[in-house]
Length: 237
Image 1 (cartoon, one colour):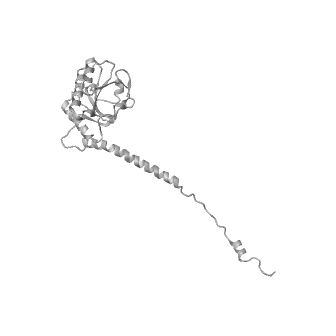
Image 2 (tube, rainbow, N blue to C red):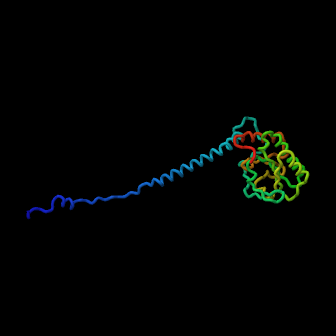
Image 3 (tube, rainbow, N blue to C red):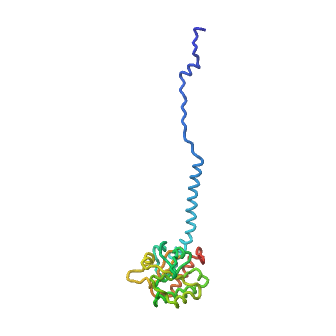
């Protein structure tokens, strides 16, 4: 068999064969994909939760200021946009102890601004505060009275006795006038002490009471606000 070709079909196949090439692709990571899905789901749930929490507040304001019966008017001036109480507002009590601004949140506030000497306008505003709160009946605990003293004068003993007797006492705090002006303002030519302020439970100044306020009309404003917020606001902080 010396004349036979020793290279058979196997040999020929070996010479002509093309080597197989393999390409390795990165496979998706189930762990990474799962983490991404969880992150997206968590963000969606957080946004939904924020919307749910904010919805009652938004709805109550819309009901009071937008979707309201013809002929209803606000007595107090609406502040647009509302102005949140500054987190750094330097408040202190009458003994000089620092008072955190966010401690005022959680209740509707009727705020009087006046010097410690408390002139006739101040006395009238403090009287309206007391009378209005008591006139709210079962909703009285949803409104706090606040007196912001914007100077260094010491309040008279009889004034302090009046605001601390009968019902919940008035919260009396000192604040520098220039610092207070970064939050509460009045039209040009008017005095800050001539106006009271209505602050919502989130700490946002949202209404300015006219000078020489009419107690009955102011009471209607407050009652409407309390009704509009009855679905989300609760008495006490």
